[in-house]
Length: 240
Image (cartoon, rainbow, N blue to C red):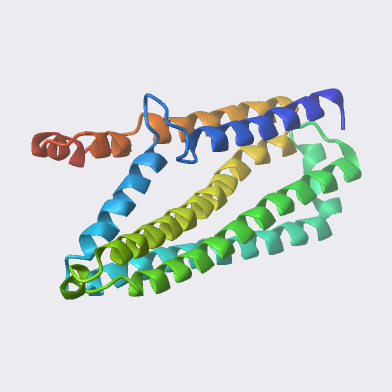
């Protein structure tokens, strides 16, 4: 590990922390993030559900959230297994390194440390996805406590409290899911470190730029900002 490696690693960590701080949905920026806008729509969805006698649609939505989270949790475990397999093939990997141009080889110890860092990233992602799956499960239980439309007039204060509780649990599950996805996305930038510290910094900056665009300047965000039917139709064919 050289000074350039440590500098690139610090840039990676600071980029991760800074992006998480800016986009987690709690910051009230003048330009709202996609996460914050979607949190608002989570609340609208659950509030609209209290007017429905049949809530199969809502339970299907929650099941879809859980299935997506379970998929990424399983993928993280597979990625961790792949990293351990890579540790067992260090000599073969270093032999390939020596034959590749423009690759800064840091020796066996440096290579193994980089792979361990990649394992830590996917381990963090797995725990985030696993906890998100559990929170969505809790959200479905809390959703079941919301009174039916016929009972809302009898206990409006209690119904409001139960609705808010279900919304907060769902938003919290989404926050942990986003944290896991963030780790998976940034792991792509981390792969640049296996080439060299300069490439590591460049791939980190590239991934960060893509994530910032999606959160603050994407077509998906603009769809949530625009309220007119004409605006929604104009963006329906636009690619993110």
